[in-house]
Structure formats: C-alpha cells, structure tokens
Image 1 (tube, rainbow over the protein chains, first blue to last red):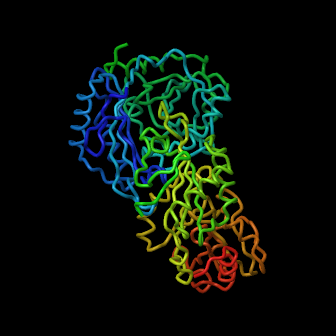
Image 2: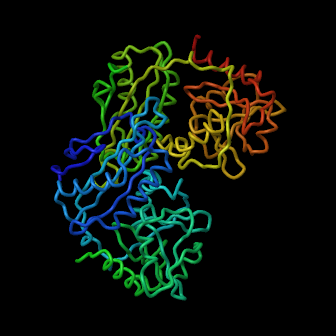
Image 3: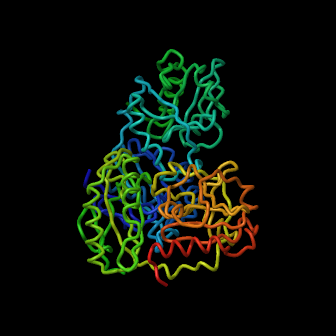
Amino acid sequence: MSDLYISVNGEMMLANSLSINASDLAIQRGYGIFDFLVTVNGKPIFLEDHINRFYLSAESMHLPVLLDKSALIATIEALMQKNNLPNSGIRITLTGGNSPDGYSIGNPNLIISQSLFNYSNQVFDKGLKLITYEHQRQLPHIKTIDYLKAIYLQPTIKAAGADDVLYHFNEWITECPRANFFIVTNQEEVLTPKKNILQGVTRKKIFELNGYTIKEANISLDMLFSAKEAFISSSTKNILPVNSINGNLIGEGKPGPITRNLYEQLVQSKEISF
Amino acid sequence: MSDLYISVNGEMMLANSLSINASDLAIQRGYGIFDFLVTVNGKPIFLEDHINRFYLSAESMHLPVLLDKSALIATIEALMQKNNLPNSGIRITLTGGNSPDGYSIGNPNLIISQSLFNYSNQVFDKGLKLITYEHQRQLPHIKTIDYLKAIYLQPTIKAAGADDVLYHFNEWITECPRANFFIVTNQEEVLTPKKNILQGVTRKKIFELNGYTIKEANISLDMLFSAKEAFISSSTKNILPVNSINGNLIGEGKPGPITRNLYEQLVQSKEISF
C-alpha cells in the first residue's frame, strides 16, 4: 500500500512521505478531530453525513478547516481517482496544528488518507463478546482523536477474552469506543442510548430502517441482561450482534432475528454485495 | 531556536528536521505520555523525580521505553551539552508509535527536546484568576498527552478574563490542567487535593517545606471561598498565588504571606536566582 496517495492541506502526495511536525498539537496535547467513511465499488457511503459531522467537530473544537465542504468533497474525489481503490476507508483528520507554545491552537493540518477496506472481511455470524467498563468519554458528541482509555484497556479486553468494551457511567450504558450500542427488548423494541454518546452515522441510518419501533432511551446495566438481543453499529462494522456481556449470554447467545433483519436492510441500503 | 538539537529514539538530530509519521498512535488516537523538567544554570531540577514518573507513566500505558533510566539520563546530558542552553525546559515524549491498524500500540517513539525557559519571566506578585469547571481528567495519575478539555476550554477562560481553569468533579476540587492546587485555611493549614490528580513533582517538594502543616485533604467547592490563601504549583510555575476564583476574591485578593513564604523556600531549594 506504499504507493497510495494522500491529501495534505489540499496537496496530493505519496502517503509514505507524510509526516507531521512534532510540535503539532495532536502530538503535544492529543488535540485533533477526524471522521472516517467507507467506499464501496468506488462510491462513498453516506458521504454528506460524514462531511457534515466533520465540520461540526471542527467548529466545536475551534479548529478552522482550510477547505470548504465542496472543496473537501472534490479533494476526496480526486484522491479516490488517483488511488483507484474502489473498496476503501477514507479518513479525514484535522490536527490542532503547529503550536508556538505547545498549548494554543496553531494552523490545523488537514489530512485525507485512503486505505484498503472491504466489508467482506466482517463476520456477522460470529457475534461479539463485550465487557462493561465505567467511563464517560469527554466531549462525547465530538469525534475527537481521544481514544486514550480505549487503547489503555486493550490488555484488559484481551485478558477477559472479549472483543470490545461497552462503556457505562454510573448505571447508564453509553457506547463502545468506536461503535454505538443497541438492545432489543422482550417487547421487541429496539433501543439505543440517547445521551453522552457520539451521534454515529450508521446509528442515524438505523432509525430509518423498517419493521420495528426503534428509539432512543436511557439504558441501564440491569436492562442489558434482560435484553432479547443486542448489537453494535459503526461505519466499518455495519451491524454486529453481541452474544454476551461480562460472560452473561444475551438472549440465546447468538445473533438474533431482529438484529439480522436490520443488518440485511442496512447492507442493502449501502449497496454492499458480498 | 531552529539550530537546537533533539534526541529521537536515542539519535541526535536537528529539532526542525523532526517529524512524526502520520500513522503514529499519538496522531491517530491521542495516545502518548510525556514529562517536562526545567534546567537552571545547566542543572536539571528534580531530575530523578521526573524520570521516575516518566517510566511509571510509560508502564501504566503499556508503552515500552527504548532506553533504560541511566541511558535516558545520559541522553539528556548529551543533549544539554550539545545545545548549550543552561536555562531550559526539557520535554521527554513517548508516543504510541506507528500502528499498523491505527489502533494497537506500535513501537513507541521516544523524543527528548529542549527549549529556552527562564523562571525570571514568571511573575509571582501578579497572582492568578481562576474559573472552576466540572471535569475529571481520565487516568489522572498518568502524565498522558491528553489536554483535550484544557485546550477546548481556552476560549471560555479568555471570555471570563481568567488565567486558567480549576477542575472539580461533583463538589470536589482536583487540579488545574497543568498544575496542582492548594489552599491555606483560616487555621493556617495548607491543604491540597488527595485523589484523582497528577502527582506533581513540585507538589511533592512542597510537602517537604518548613513552618506549616501541609497535608492532603478532600477540598470542596465551599471550602474554596472560605480559604485565606490559595496557590497553584508546577515545575514551570513553581508556586503562583491565586487571587480570585469565579470572580470571588480569595482572602484579600492578593498574594498571601504563607504562599509567599512557601514560594521563597521552594525557589531557594531549586537554587534559582533572579
């Protein structure tokens, strides 16, 4: 993949030549935002939602963006053409920029990179094991680069034989580090946490799927273990079933029918073929 | 300062030539640690405390350090000799390293940089205005690069005409983003928050100063406004008096005698001459 191109502040260059000045606030103070979207057969999925969220994140973090929306989209298109990688992930990163004092915001660096990504590598049928962990992400509605706790917890997740962590704060479930979370109740309602979460693009699309009552709610730890089904959602994972949480089976401990139905609808809406 | 040298993974190079690969976990996920110490007349201040904390931070974050303690100290000494900058700040940074998947820890990059720093630029007599803000730093005992909330809050601090923010969680005071916090009670006891804070090196040294009862305590928001004096401490700020918090004067709203006495003792112990 070393011959892929990348766009840095609007200029195209070889990806492997990209490096960031060590005085950038991303390196000095972990300050930056990003967004990530997938292309399928050369078509960016839910592009406008990702772009809109990117500009919202930038504005919230007081970071000016060198390119306006249409120029950013044109740059993404140019990059896709140059790289000729129809099934890919596109990451748009905006760093705090080179900071003269290592603390104030500089001129942000806007980096658009593309990498190989293919949904066919995802395994729906396997299902996930989660463990819960008490943590509230800071500025949860903004897609910042802060994954400190998520990466810090990797050995804990591994030691538990789990696939990922599910955050809660006090008794209230929020989200996984890189995915939103849903349960299906015994009344066959599909619920997802309402507050203190990232507004996932896939989460938003799930509300538009048919056949079920899908709504926001406060979900307590107790509610987890009486759920009939549970699943997570993200741009790269689509919908993945959760089989167990803290070693307790959810429903029958295998992908449930409502999760599968929503997954199939979602995949169809994205025109993904396997 | 463009002709200063820097040490990167044990190799000396010109500072302005340093850049970090964009796939480093510091840029991708805000994952890294650092420490910062001051040199006065060519002598590193409290070197061992900073080095010990650095290795503790690295271990806590599952980051291997390329150099052992003695090799790290030797590298710092070589860098100081090369740069010939007697009054300086030295920053030791350890990033998450280049990550193949943008999420798992790679080979951390160890960067030691030196910059001009002089205590004489600090103004004790002016005193600081703080505003309180509810936030608990994640992994507060580890000196990570996470200053997301601190930098996010800069416009809020500026709008309030304040110098810095003082974090609390629920009713309990913790610290400033880059400094520990102390109050002097009406009984002339010097108190500093005990929990959920960074163990500052200067904070530790203050406990060793003479003439006062100095101890850890839980400090509530209410206790702030009945305090006789208040001050902050850090390696770069030594001790700086706090004149007001949220617009309410602390004591008489000017540097108090106990704060001044502790400051003078601290400065003397560091052999700083103005």
